[in-house]
Image (tube, rainbow, N blue to C red):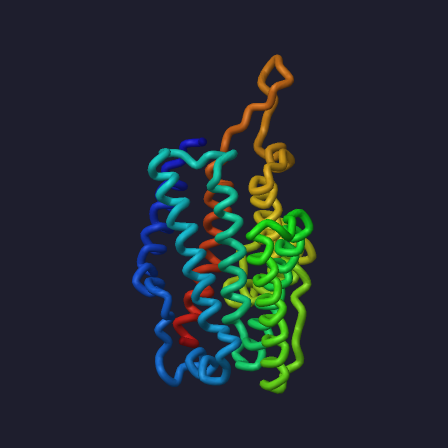
Length: 274
């Protein structure tokens, strides 16, 4: 990996600030203050808990960012082909989900978004269960486990929709990670717009959405063992057709900073609303 003392200093600073959040993210109970918006959300429903769900996503983001830092510290390098990239994907998605849940001022909108994420999670789990049942023989003891889990997921989905109706809300659907990143990016562009190079036309401005999608696609490629992300950081060895791969520390900084920006803004919202 390229040596860059300034970049290494920025990474160390990021992790020092990250660890100041550790005490806020310890334990399963988010510890919302009585009378706060998120505590009042919890009083409205036992089925949907926007604040608690956001808190769990933030805990996940913290754990993955912390683990990346410990791994890099132990290895003394950030591998361009290593598990850090796949871990970054999970941290980025978890941070975006937390901010998506916490961004609305309106309690009803937080509930609609919480329902949308919960239904998407159940839908994904149901696909996994159905795939398993398609290949597991009924005589296998695990068949009943999957069958019971399928029924529980179906009941969960029905319960979520019933709760949305009880709250007098219209359910919303989240159309994939692209829409999630778009909503998160609009918030970030509003509260902390990115500096724009002087020579970039306004129609070609640098946006959070473009950066979020760039790192999401890049880290997804690593997580699923695709080779196409390597083309961006690979060069042909002189006199051969072989590719050599060397990490660019600026790219490492970019990925971790993007995750940090989303996480830090979500943590600020958690403090404001909880």
